[in-house]
Image 1 (spheres, one colour):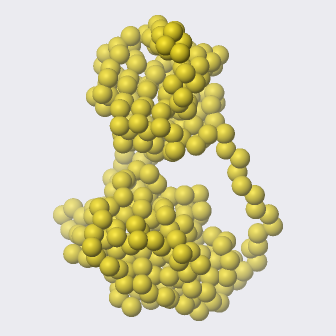
Image 2 (image 1 turned 135 degrees about the vertical axis):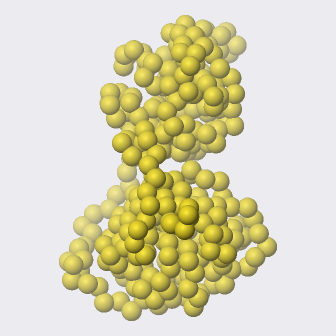
Image 3 (image 1 turned 120 degrees about the vertical axis):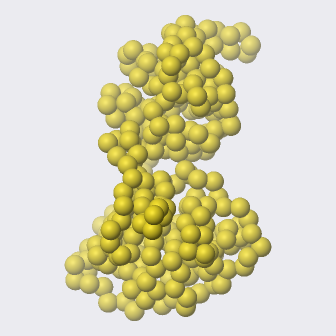
Length: 322
């Protein structure tokens, strides 16, 4: 089994598509292709689409005792000790972040959460990640030679371009001796989280920000969204600071990364952490009375006016056309 510099692990193989392009870019620094690691039990999900994304090899990890994060982490740590890569990338799903942190603890590795980019500059390995609620992107220099385990926000990057390269499929059997630190952890219950909205699959989104004066005015935002057959999203301040909408409606680096056909930003200033959340949208419309609002730079159509004039006017026009 080869020892590559860059590997991606995911408990859900389809999530690998969302980090395939940064993995290919990162591995190219070392003149290599990246490797992909998935649980053996998920091998039926390794279809042709996933195989064509530039992987050097796909490792099927066997011998995992359960689908607990602790068991995934232990099996992964055993493999890392054998192949000794430089960087392990994991999609930053809820389970992925848990697996990454436990694996880092087991290996005494460097843990970089929700990074935007890893690169080499002046001979030093560096990474960029959001801090202070996503309002600032900070760059870190890695001083240690230890393995770096980095989680990448899903849906932030498009899948890597298809290649004709056929990856080698490898089965790796874990010699399982679960350490006592995690041997007494068992799952007592598991049930799906009830969600009211799935912004990732929405074709149209009307997102609202700090420009909205009061919570009651969300009614007109929902009315506009209904007329457009759209979902309602929001900026961080609306969900986390004001608590007017649930966090699952938050668009941005600290929320959901979306790519709808239409994204209407109502009263949103356009801080970088929010912009990253919608930048892959096909058409972006910004409605903001501040002519200098940063979001205008990212919009295809800009309306510089009071949202309390524009939104009701749009609602009335859409009703007339029904």
